[in-house]
Structure formats: C-alpha cells, structure tokens
Length: 326
Image 1: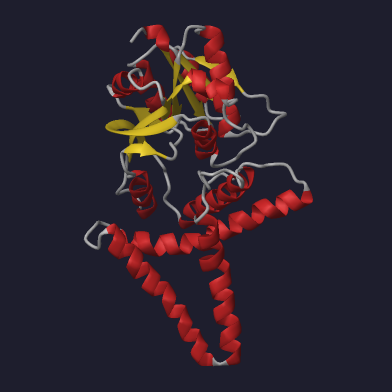
Image 2 (image 1 turned 135 degrees about the vertical axis):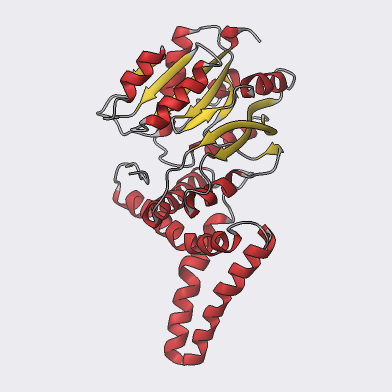
C-alpha cells in the first residue's frame, strides 16, 4: 500500500473530546486526513486544524446531513490527493484501530469485486448505560458478505463515484442506501472479523435512545421508498414489523377490548415476543432482557419516524436533522 492510495474522511458535529481522540487515532495511521464540520460550536474546527487535517466547513445555507458531509469530504480529498483510490470514512465519535487500514486494504486490493469493506465496530463504554450496551450489541453483526455497512468503512473510490456517492439529502440510512446501489451494479460489501473502530454513543438517557429509534424509522421509510422496485428489498421486513407491533396490534387490542374486556388479554403477545427475542439472542447474555424489551418498545418509536417521514413528504417539507446527542 502506498501512502497516497488511501485517504480518510472524518465527519463531525460538536463531538468535543470524542473528535480529538478520533483525529489522534487517524493521524497515527495516515497524513491524508479531511475533516468535515457540520456547524460545530465547540472548537472542533480548531482541533482538526491543529492536528494537521484539511478542514471543510459546510455551507450553513444548506441542510446538514452525514451523507452530504461525506460527499464533500471526498471531493476535498480528491483535490488534495488526486491519486487516492480508497477512502476510509470515520465518524467523529469513533477512534480507528491502528492496524485496520492495512488489513482492510490487503483484503480489498485482492478482491476487485468488493466495493466496501468494514470490520468490527465496538462501543467504547458499553457499561456506562444500558443504551450504550444496546449499541454495542447492535454493532455485533455477522462477518463475510453483507448487505450493508455502517458509517465507518473503507470504500473503493471508483465504485463510489460510479454510483454518485451518498444521497446528500438523506438524514438516516445513507450507508445501506449507498450499498443497495452498489449491489445493483454487481459490487459486494464485506465485513471482516477484525477490529475497526471504537464508538462512543454517549447515550445516558431514555430520551436519547427514543429519538435515535425515531430517526431509524424515518430512515427505513425514506430509503425503502427510494428502492421500492429494487430486487434487494431493503428494510422490507423492518417497516411492516414497526407498523404491526407499534400501530396495528395495539389499536386492534384497544378496539377489541371495547367490545369485550377479555380481548385485552391479547396484549400478552408483547411479553411473549420479548421472551422470543431474548431466547434468540441468548438468555445468558448480559442485558439481553432489557435489550429484548427495548427492541419491542423501539417499534413504537420507529413507527413514529415512519409517520413523520410520510407526513413531511405529503406536506412537501424539507428534510431536517433528527439528533439524539445532547
């Protein structure tokens, strides 16, 4: 691997010390760093400049999204390093493993059919809150060929450009959406069993987790609508699941209960479903019962996000960020 083959694009918004740690971890690996800032007011831009990163400050007159930030970061990186062939995306609340880029490059350089390679993303403080632990469990996905990656990934620039990069208006789900378009072109997405990044969710309150789940539902709806004719059927099960568990079933139970109180016992299907989720996850795993309960509760938040998307669509409203971090 030549130094000019790979560059890193970091995006952030008011990440504070998390960004400082992110920048240091990337600086230890490469000098080709672009930091894209989305209206931070905490000294993030100064921190990035001090470490030697090229800084892009997004135009305040356009809506901020992670997708837009990454696209503008890639444009800046190409202008700085025209020979770059691969881009490592890193979120500003993550730190990069010191050997990840070498491992990722060695793999993708031998697999011309792979457009995106990602590895293990771990939560830095999984015991700090149950919501951090849930995030850590969420990152634990199977290795091998995958339908999508997250925000941290090494991307083949040729493939990225061929599909037009990220959709800049998406406020959530931009990485799986990009992966759908790549897969439709015949590219593959791959997850390695190797440490890639440590993430700091910084979620300590139920409200943060709830808003994050609402954002997920919003992303489900928007991306699924964009690819409703795709053979890959992205989130084809997630949306009906949220609608059923978060809307149809409780409404049915309430209406039936008005007819006869015994029908209210149908609500027992919720604890049964929670039990089933826990069994599938492994009843001996730490926090599994809380995980199962919150995954069921998330259906209500996701449905709220789905409704929010279609309400905005019907009214012709512009996209706005849904932020969960304080």
